[in-house]
Image 1 (cartoon, helix red, strand yellow):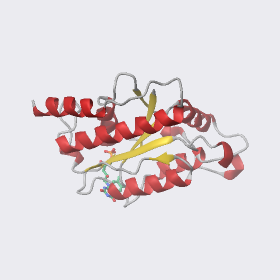
Image 2: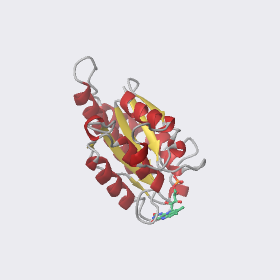
Image 3: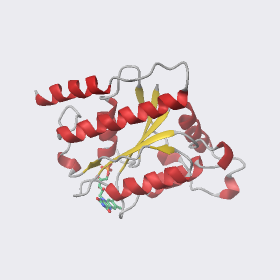
Image 4: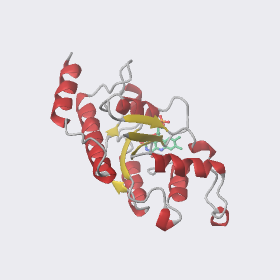
Length: 203
Ligand code: FNR
Protein backbone atom coordinates (compact mmCIF):
# COMPACT_ATOMS: atom_id res chain seq x y z
CA UNK A 1 0.00 0.00 0.00
CA UNK A 2 1.36 3.39 -1.00
CA UNK A 3 0.88 6.51 1.13
CA UNK A 4 1.75 9.80 -0.54
CA UNK A 5 3.20 12.28 1.97
CA UNK A 6 2.67 15.97 1.19
CA UNK A 7 4.41 18.67 3.20
CA UNK A 8 2.68 22.04 3.03
CA UNK A 9 6.04 23.68 3.67
CA UNK A 10 8.50 24.09 0.82
CA UNK A 11 11.60 24.91 2.85
CA UNK A 12 14.46 22.44 3.11
CA UNK A 13 14.60 22.22 6.92
CA UNK A 14 10.83 21.87 7.27
CA UNK A 15 9.50 20.43 10.52
CA UNK A 16 6.49 19.18 8.60
CA UNK A 17 8.71 17.13 6.34
CA UNK A 18 10.33 15.72 9.48
CA UNK A 19 6.88 14.85 10.80
CA UNK A 20 6.14 12.93 7.61
CA UNK A 21 9.41 11.03 8.04
CA UNK A 22 8.41 10.19 11.62
CA UNK A 23 5.13 8.87 10.23
CA UNK A 24 7.00 6.77 7.67
CA UNK A 25 8.85 5.09 10.53
CA UNK A 26 5.55 3.99 12.09
CA UNK A 27 4.04 2.37 9.02
CA UNK A 28 3.75 -1.42 8.91
CA UNK A 29 6.04 -3.23 6.43
CA UNK A 30 3.23 -3.69 3.89
CA UNK A 31 2.88 0.09 3.52
CA UNK A 32 5.34 2.68 2.24
CA UNK A 33 5.37 6.47 2.40
CA UNK A 34 6.51 8.33 -0.68
CA UNK A 35 7.21 12.06 -0.30
CA UNK A 36 5.74 14.32 -2.97
CA UNK A 37 8.48 16.72 -4.07
CA UNK A 38 6.68 18.69 -6.79
CA UNK A 39 4.57 21.15 -4.80
CA UNK A 40 6.69 24.22 -5.55
CA UNK A 41 6.50 23.67 -9.31
CA UNK A 42 2.69 23.79 -9.49
CA UNK A 43 1.54 27.00 -11.21
CA UNK A 44 -1.28 29.20 -9.89
CA UNK A 45 -4.72 27.80 -10.60
CA UNK A 46 -6.35 29.42 -13.60
CA UNK A 47 -9.56 28.09 -15.13
CA UNK A 48 -8.27 29.22 -18.52
CA UNK A 49 -5.43 26.68 -18.19
CA UNK A 50 -7.64 23.74 -17.28
CA UNK A 51 -7.85 22.47 -20.85
CA UNK A 52 -4.09 21.89 -21.06
CA UNK A 53 -2.74 21.83 -17.50
CA UNK A 54 1.00 22.21 -16.91
CA UNK A 55 3.16 19.09 -16.58
CA UNK A 56 3.61 19.83 -12.86
CA UNK A 57 -0.16 19.70 -12.41
CA UNK A 58 -0.41 16.42 -14.30
CA UNK A 59 2.41 14.97 -12.16
CA UNK A 60 0.59 16.07 -9.00
CA UNK A 61 -2.71 14.54 -10.08
CA UNK A 62 -0.97 11.34 -11.15
CA UNK A 63 0.88 11.05 -7.82
CA UNK A 64 -2.47 11.28 -6.02
CA UNK A 65 -4.13 8.77 -8.32
CA UNK A 66 -1.24 6.30 -7.90
CA UNK A 67 -1.43 6.52 -4.10
CA UNK A 68 -3.79 4.46 -1.96
CA UNK A 69 -3.89 7.20 0.69
CA UNK A 70 -2.65 10.74 1.30
CA UNK A 71 -0.95 12.06 4.41
CA UNK A 72 -0.69 15.87 4.55
CA UNK A 73 1.53 17.64 7.06
CA UNK A 74 0.89 21.36 7.15
CA UNK A 75 2.40 24.35 8.87
CA UNK A 76 0.18 27.27 9.78
CA UNK A 77 0.59 30.59 7.99
CA UNK A 78 -1.48 33.41 9.46
CA UNK A 79 -3.95 30.97 11.04
CA UNK A 80 -4.53 29.13 7.78
CA UNK A 81 -2.83 26.78 5.31
CA UNK A 82 0.05 27.88 3.05
CA UNK A 83 -1.22 29.34 -0.21
CA UNK A 84 0.71 26.93 -2.39
CA UNK A 85 -0.86 23.93 -0.68
CA UNK A 86 -4.37 25.35 -1.16
CA UNK A 87 -3.52 26.06 -4.79
CA UNK A 88 -2.46 22.43 -5.31
CA UNK A 89 -5.71 21.22 -3.75
CA UNK A 90 -7.70 23.43 -6.10
CA UNK A 91 -5.96 21.85 -9.10
CA UNK A 92 -6.55 18.33 -7.78
CA UNK A 93 -10.24 19.08 -7.16
CA UNK A 94 -10.96 19.55 -10.87
CA UNK A 95 -12.58 18.44 -13.11
CA UNK A 96 -15.16 17.65 -10.43
CA UNK A 97 -16.39 14.27 -11.71
CA UNK A 98 -12.91 12.81 -12.29
CA UNK A 99 -10.91 14.81 -9.73
CA UNK A 100 -7.83 13.04 -8.34
CA UNK A 101 -8.89 13.87 -4.78
CA UNK A 102 -12.39 12.47 -5.15
CA UNK A 103 -12.92 9.61 -2.64
CA UNK A 104 -9.20 9.53 -1.82
CA UNK A 105 -8.49 8.41 1.77
CA UNK A 106 -6.67 11.32 3.43
CA UNK A 107 -5.33 12.39 6.82
CA UNK A 108 -3.93 15.66 8.09
CA UNK A 109 -1.23 16.30 10.67
CA UNK A 110 0.86 19.41 11.29
CA UNK A 111 3.72 21.08 13.10
CA UNK A 112 4.52 24.65 13.96
CA UNK A 113 7.09 26.36 16.10
CA UNK A 114 4.26 28.12 17.96
CA UNK A 115 2.15 26.98 20.90
CA UNK A 116 -0.78 25.46 19.01
CA UNK A 117 0.82 23.10 16.52
CA UNK A 118 -0.93 24.38 13.39
CA UNK A 119 -4.30 23.28 14.74
CA UNK A 120 -6.30 25.85 12.73
CA UNK A 121 -4.43 25.07 9.55
CA UNK A 122 -5.21 21.38 10.00
CA UNK A 123 -8.93 22.16 10.39
CA UNK A 124 -8.86 24.37 7.30
CA UNK A 125 -7.06 21.71 5.31
CA UNK A 126 -9.56 19.02 6.29
CA UNK A 127 -12.36 21.36 5.24
CA UNK A 128 -10.82 22.04 1.81
CA UNK A 129 -10.05 18.35 1.24
CA UNK A 130 -13.60 17.32 2.19
CA UNK A 131 -15.01 19.99 -0.14
CA UNK A 132 -12.87 18.49 -2.91
CA UNK A 133 -14.46 15.08 -2.26
CA UNK A 134 -11.63 13.37 -0.34
CA UNK A 135 -12.43 10.93 2.47
CA UNK A 136 -10.80 12.76 5.34
CA UNK A 137 -9.99 11.14 8.69
CA UNK A 138 -11.53 13.30 11.44
CA UNK A 139 -8.41 13.50 13.63
CA UNK A 140 -5.51 15.88 13.97
CA UNK A 141 -2.00 15.92 15.38
CA UNK A 142 -0.88 19.35 16.57
CA UNK A 143 2.89 19.24 17.08
CA UNK A 144 3.67 22.50 18.86
CA UNK A 145 7.13 23.85 19.65
CA UNK A 146 8.43 21.97 16.61
CA UNK A 147 12.04 23.04 17.20
CA UNK A 148 12.08 20.76 20.25
CA UNK A 149 9.59 18.11 19.12
CA UNK A 150 11.90 15.59 17.44
CA UNK A 151 14.63 13.30 18.70
CA UNK A 152 17.94 13.07 16.84
CA UNK A 153 16.72 9.88 15.13
CA UNK A 154 13.66 11.72 13.75
CA UNK A 155 11.08 10.18 16.09
CA UNK A 156 8.70 12.33 18.11
CA UNK A 157 9.85 13.24 21.60
CA UNK A 158 6.34 13.11 23.12
CA UNK A 159 5.10 9.56 23.59
CA UNK A 160 1.43 10.63 23.38
CA UNK A 161 2.06 12.35 20.06
CA UNK A 162 3.73 9.24 18.66
CA UNK A 163 0.76 7.14 19.77
CA UNK A 164 -1.70 9.61 18.24
CA UNK A 165 0.24 9.58 14.97
CA UNK A 166 0.23 5.80 15.00
CA UNK A 167 -3.56 5.83 15.54
CA UNK A 168 -4.08 8.24 12.64
CA UNK A 169 -2.03 5.99 10.37
CA UNK A 170 -4.02 2.94 11.44
CA UNK A 171 -7.28 4.77 10.63
CA UNK A 172 -5.88 5.99 7.31
CA UNK A 173 -4.73 2.53 6.23
CA UNK A 174 -8.07 1.03 7.30
CA UNK A 175 -9.86 3.64 5.18
CA UNK A 176 -7.57 2.87 2.24
CA UNK A 177 -8.10 -0.82 2.84
CA UNK A 178 -11.89 -0.39 2.51
CA UNK A 179 -11.38 1.76 -0.57
CA UNK A 180 -9.00 -0.75 -2.23
CA UNK A 181 -11.44 -3.67 -1.91
CA UNK A 182 -10.38 -7.28 -2.56
CA UNK A 183 -6.75 -8.08 -3.36
CA UNK A 184 -5.24 -6.15 -0.46
CA UNK A 185 -4.32 -7.87 2.82
CA UNK A 186 -6.14 -6.12 5.67
CA UNK A 187 -4.05 -4.33 8.33
CA UNK A 188 -5.60 -5.28 11.70
CA UNK A 189 -2.50 -5.19 13.94
CA UNK A 190 -3.24 -1.93 15.72
CA UNK A 191 -2.97 -3.08 19.32
CA UNK A 192 0.22 -5.06 18.68
CA UNK A 193 1.85 -2.08 16.96
CA UNK A 194 0.80 0.29 19.73
CA UNK A 195 2.31 -2.07 22.28
CA UNK A 196 5.54 -2.25 20.36
CA UNK A 197 5.64 1.52 20.06
CA UNK A 198 4.99 1.92 23.80
CA UNK A 199 7.83 -0.45 24.65
CA UNK A 200 10.34 1.25 22.36
CA UNK A 201 9.36 4.71 23.60
CA UNK A 202 9.88 3.65 27.22
CA UNK A 203 13.47 2.49 26.57
C1 FNR B 1 4.14 31.36 10.41
N1 FNR B 1 4.06 30.59 11.56
C2 FNR B 1 2.88 30.46 12.25
N2 FNR B 1 2.72 29.55 13.26
C3 FNR B 1 1.52 29.39 13.89
O1 FNR B 1 1.42 28.56 14.79
N3 FNR B 1 0.44 30.16 13.52
C4 FNR B 1 0.51 31.08 12.53
O2 FNR B 1 -0.47 31.72 12.22
C5 FNR B 1 1.77 31.26 11.86
N4 FNR B 1 1.89 32.16 10.82
C6 FNR B 1 3.04 32.17 10.05
C7 FNR B 1 3.08 32.93 8.88
C8 FNR B 1 4.19 32.86 8.05
C9 FNR B 1 4.20 33.62 6.76
C10 FNR B 1 5.30 32.05 8.41
C11 FNR B 1 6.51 31.97 7.49
C12 FNR B 1 5.28 31.33 9.56
C13 FNR B 1 5.21 29.78 12.01
C14 FNR B 1 5.26 28.47 11.26
O3 FNR B 1 4.21 27.65 11.61
C15 FNR B 1 6.61 27.80 11.54
O4 FNR B 1 7.62 28.57 10.96
C16 FNR B 1 6.69 26.38 11.03
O5 FNR B 1 7.83 25.78 11.54
C17 FNR B 1 6.72 26.30 9.52
O6 FNR B 1 6.68 24.96 9.12
P1 FNR B 1 7.96 24.22 8.55
O7 FNR B 1 8.52 25.05 7.43
O8 FNR B 1 8.95 24.07 9.67
O9 FNR B 1 7.42 22.89 8.11
